[in-house]
Image: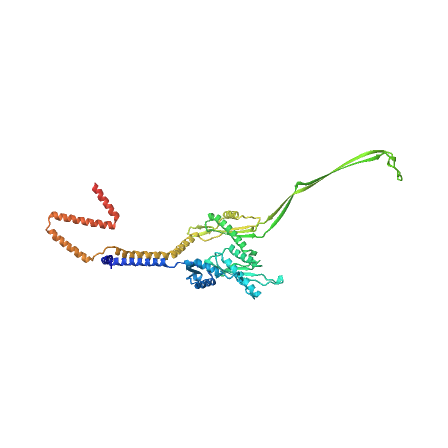
Length: 536
């Protein structure tokens, strides 16, 4: 064995023998902890790092991937109840590329990859069934792309085509959704799923689609003419939102007047969802515009015999044989035609969808509680003036229109004595908080007591120096006193005074040390006083 090793072992052995038992236990615990930490660190550094290959796999896809990994002899781990597969980090990308080439992953159901391989001899019935399966699988995959949807199943009913139109049955669809993490779908998302399915299947309308979740809650169902006056889910949601906004508006307006929680408002809005187009044409006869104007002018010129005799009807001679003088005639005629257009205004008005047809408002307000001489409290409703003021404010808040037929009712009733309610609510609140915080507070208290009464004494015992037995210490003090007495018997008075002074100094040092250990602030104050006295 080398000398330095022997020397190190000897030093370690001597050190181990010179320390106390608690120090040995503490040192051993530290060494054991250090060994555990080093072992864990070495294990963590040398272990194989696994990365996620695929997550949220369906059972069929997970089984195919596992078979592929076994065939390729790639180590793997399964997590999340079989939906997540992990492989070593060095094999992640290689395994993904190989799986993509093997066409193992199909996702939610089987899609149109059913027709990748054509099989000879398939009947039309088999082809139709495969087409229905493929269409259901493709729709399931598309719906599962939503972040709130964990999985989806689509069931289609595609009736065979008939030669007669009246005998042709429409297709229908049923959709089952499994939502992830207790999440929910908004009405717009449900409507998007319905529109997606209806436009993907020929002849399928939204009125033949039903959507439900895995908990049995119907998210969308075909509406009938008798349900909610033929309103769609979107229209119903719009109506409820409008009513809620009007209620909140009135309650916020009345809260500063009657107090918080002392007014209840309910609004019923009758909305018009009909699409109406109005064409209006207006004529103004007072304002005319010239459209066209036509002017005609005619001029006639000719000669005539004046004063001549009457010719014989049987005469066939020349004209100059007639006697008389000749004259010239001229005539002019002017005509004008003007066409006017009457000023016309044509307007096409499209009525707003969801316009308010009628509003019905009900307002309930709390009254006053008066304390009587005997200490009892009685309820007094609000006066007519106050109710009229509240009515006027509510009308302004909701846009009241009497011509439209709106109605409003304001009443004052007793909601309950607020003093009694506050006391009971305070007790309930305190009890509720005690139930919520009682156990954690007790646990913290038990831990603190354990640390103070158990851990603290053990730590102080390990840190304190070793104290000898009181009996032995008393015997040593008695022996030292006897020795001191024997020595002082033969001393002079000067020597005795010096010994006494030295003893007082030692006692002062001991007292000062004890005072510093127990109360540092007091010791510093005393030292300052001593210094001040010395300077004086």
